[in-house]
Image (cartoon, rainbow over all chains, first blue to last red; front, side):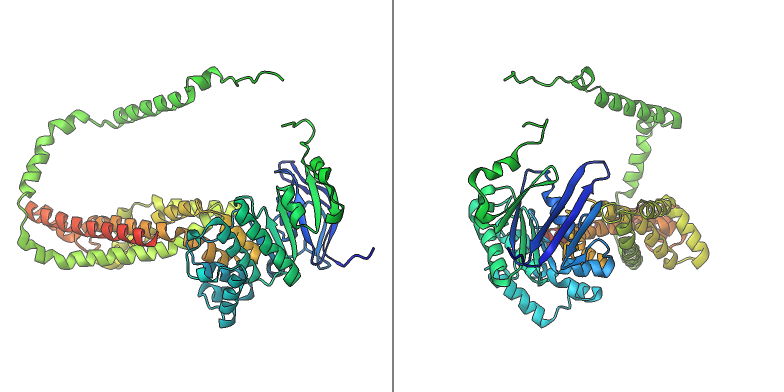
Length: 256
Length: 264
């Protein structure tokens, strides 16, 4: 079977927190370019940590992670910022700047293309301002350009966050529980948007989810984490109904 | 299945021993410090007559004095605005360096805070006396004193505000690949601007009052006139000065309330 060259690769990655808690344990797997990967697992299984090690929002203790064949662990300063620029991130809590307009929030996704002083004076090029409108059009929110972010509903805020990410021209999007605080209807809108970006732009998307049903609906491939270990990894065609139950078994001695 | 057991609280938890203990300790400290410093509450009531006497003598404000004090009052306001602005401007970078959620380096933070504590320790009257000695009698000494006083106070208020912000937007900007300064500008500033302005105006209000006292030392403004009227036992003039200052404080308070409503 022929595999596309991986865009992200984990090689024996371990993460131990300073208090001794094991975050990730000997994780090794590849993510091919353009894949829609869903990571499932209990709260505290290490899903968020796994995601954040890719753009170095979290450091790893040992092992190696490569993005486009380059090890990310040595990046510092500008190189690290350039790595992060090509990796968009979506959060459970949306993380918009509530008091600022939707436009400013979306443009803030572009700041890494400008020197610091230009971002401070808001000196974005006309092309980028048009790009912001275009990004909002792609999430169907162009009419909210000048609305304050905190006046939007949760689903709309998450779509603004996606538009912000699009401003980065990302090759990868990491979404950490993007729909955990949304109702079923807005959940579908947000997940559909992510799927569309994956298919139309070929962006590699990695999503952490609680819901197995959602995972099965959207994923190309599902991996399962339990207590920091990779316990499941199958393409969607091979995922069987009862398969994922084992991921959700409580760890030994901690029966709920 | 075993029957669910209700967790037991210890004897100390049940009778709130800790809370009661701290309250008693505080009361003891309060009474002890009153006794040791010789504060006599009885004297306050027995000498209340003199206080009313003073109020009676001030109860007939010399309104024609108003025209005399408008100029020095304006000078006081200008001093306060200048001093507060300079102090607050310098306070912002120090507040950022002191905020534990932005600066993870314990030493840098500790050093900055120690410096701020030192600045706050210096009494404003001492500062005024020093700067009057250096720059001579006049408002320059007053402005510098107020700037330093505001700097110490505002930087503490500011960093406490910064420590309460939502860290989510910072994480988002960091993940975008923004520089530290851009992160602060985009994700921190909008969250704190409101309270910054509110604290700025509060400090301005304090400085208007403080500068009346600084005038005693020759640091310019309305204080010079306050001192003169008191020395000459012209309490009717003192009353006008106090009322005029009250008007200024009320105006600042009004502006502050309005701005907070508008900016929220």
